[in-house]
Amino acid sequence: MALGEYPTVSLSAVRKKAHDLRGLVAAGVDPVALRREEEEQRNHETRTFRGVTDEWYTTVKGRYRPAYQRKTEWILRVVLCAYSGAKWPPFR
Image (tube, rainbow, N blue to C red; front, side, top):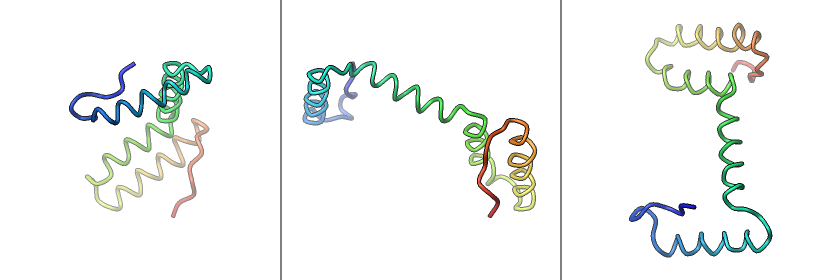
């Protein structure tokens, strides 16, 4: 299990991480499996239809005029998400 890349992570930080992981092992928790579960959860949260559209819209909305931004947001929220079943917060 990697604890960090040298020289980005200091030796003292790696020692602290290793100590924390030893505590998990002593408690009967597999740190590798725990890390995989956390990563899968993060990936699942961002790979939903809503997560992908949020990510896309955030990256491209600055390229367009405000009127086109509102229209695109409306299409994403009302039209596409209605078909996918994704829930969006109400318009501002």
